[in-house]
Image 1: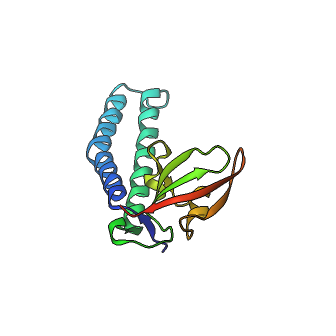
Image 2 (image 1 turned 180 degrees about the vertical axis):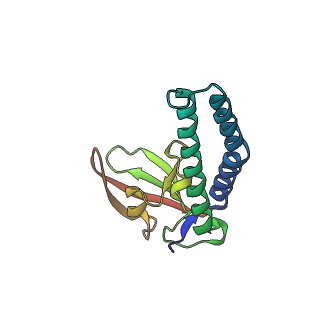
Image 3 (image 1 turned 60 degrees about the vertical axis):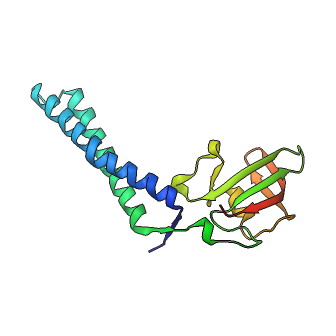
Length: 157
């Protein structure tokens, strides 16, 4: 079974989501189903069918989150160091064409949030950065075409 790299912060987010889905969403959906069932004929009851669909979606997500936690390998960035980029590194890069600097932390897929500077280890940019060092240039294929970046700084925080 493949391990899923995740930071402790990411694991906490997954655990919180799982608790919410089990303790809050599941009972709420069960109540919605009971209310809809009380309205009578289930074959033409849109509320009932919507609640059952929501229940199916929630239960699928619960199984997915439990699977992630079962395969999670928590990696503590403070225990890592070195000159090469690895999972959980915070990297400052500069676009060689526009000179625009960006700062990204390489995290697991479930905790990726581009707007907050967290990119998935599976993203094209992270794949290009892994194993590289400060001063290296990387080429990344993006939907808008190829981009070149220079690595300015690597931190493990």
